[in-house]
Length: 71
Image (cartoon, rainbow, N blue to C red; front, side, top):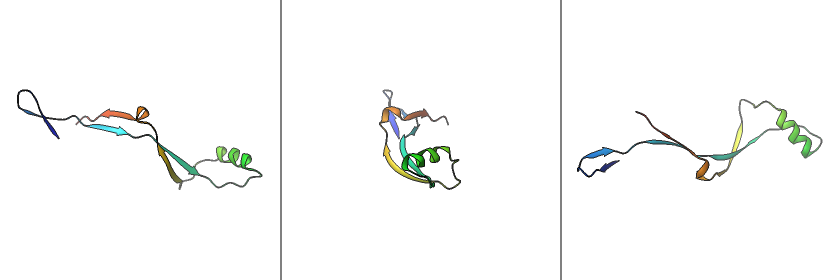
């Protein structure tokens, strides 16, 4: 997209890369004696090569990252 300056010449708009902060849940299957024990065991696990993620929600834009694209 271009914008018109006061001198009536066209200048390209700067480009930005926006990192949208989202919350996802990753699921790990464990054998445990109780839900609390399952949490402890899940925390101790190494992440598997194949990880099932489920989208939860997008965080407020005040925690997003914005970087100028340099061409």
